[in-house]
Image 1 (cartoon, one colour):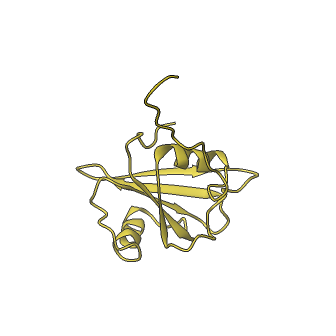
Image 2 (image 1 turned 45 degrees about the vertical axis):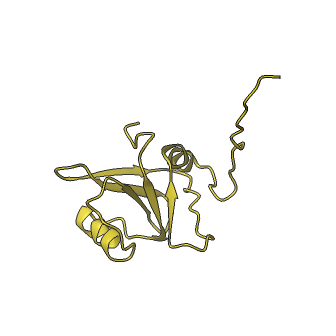
Image 3 (image 1 turned 90 degrees about the vertical axis):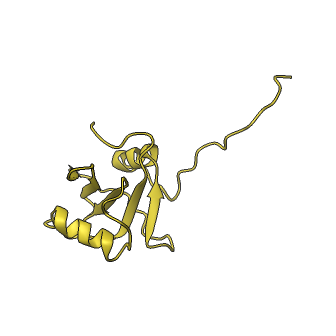
Length: 118
């Protein structure tokens, strides 16, 4: 899948959005509700109320890009029970979301720093 690179900064908008909303409407949400700069190099993720469609929008230097994924016979596990208005994710987490994992319950192993082998 063509998608965010490993170093992409991704922000998930937790409220549902009418998926008839095109790039201009999503960019208006970024600038208004999210109070972020839509012309930065970050990606912004939106979902419909049925949790079957996800859109990503971002600025690519000379224009906006838009990715969309629709799933059939399933729903995205959208993290609605968290206290913040938007959630920052990395590329691995957004791929987990696309694959159906619940991000509020998923926690990987902690990174360990070792200085010696024995």
